[in-house]
Each structure stands twice: as structure tokens, then as C-alpha cells.
Image 1 (cartoon, helix red, strand yellow):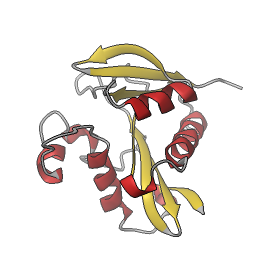
Image 2 (spheres, helix red, strand yellow):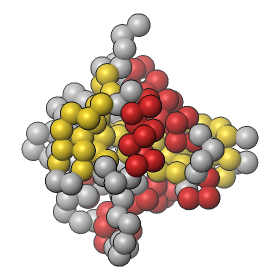
Image 3 (cartoon, one colour):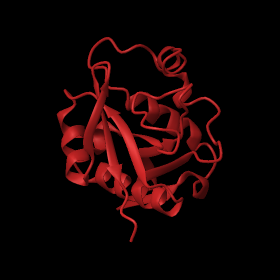
Length: 165
């Protein structure tokens, strides 16, 4: 059975799992540097450093009480943009599911819960960056309603507009 919880609802120690998922979310098919090297590189450090700021949110999926995936978002500024940066009021999200847990709808569940959370937090949109060669991810994002709105390097920037019901 899959359960989804926000990081603050989870027991301590899951910040390490979230960091592992942040590493997994970086799509580098071959010769991927170590987690420490990659997450501390100047271009990527902003994604994990000082996690727990006011608008940082993370959702963790559990299968049989074991964490198997995570989705998160954080705000960036014009001076310190993420790859999926739209503006200072649009959180950029990341997501990863452990390889052995893929194909079970966990990514979709995480994304839906994260969109719900962003809506509750008062945000009107979410953005992300995706390598267009990561076809499974692109397919999921499009299915959920994300639209391509730009690019950064070799990655697409996509946006999801949260309906104001």
C-alpha cells in the first residue's frame, strides 16, 4: 500500500532520503558524478542547501512503510535561478521515485499531492525542468497538464497553472 506524507509529518531522518531523491532527480544517463560532488556543484547546490526555508515543501511516498519516492518544491529568485525558473512567485519542483518502485503510479500520486499542497499554500503555478530525452517524465508531466514554456540549456522548462476553484 502506498502512503504519501509531507516531510514535516514524517519522522526525523528523512531529510537524508530527500537528498538522495534530489540526486536521483538529476537525469544524467551515463557517468553520473557522486551525490556529494553533484549536489555541491555551483549550478546545483541551490536545490538542496539550507533545506527547510519558509516555502520549501516536500512530500514523501512510502510503500510498506519504506520511503520509495519524493516530490518537492522551492522558490528561487532572479539572482539565483533554478533551471526551471519562471519568476520569484512560482516554485520549481523536483521529483524522483526509486527504480524498483517505478511503474506503480507513485510519481503521479506525488505530483498530484504536491500540486494540492502548492494550491493550499496560495501558489498559482508550479514549474519544472526536464530533459526532453527523459520521455517517461515528459509524458507524466504532460498528462498532468504541464506545458512547455521555454528551455534552459538542453532542458525544457514546463509550467503547470493551478486552477483557482
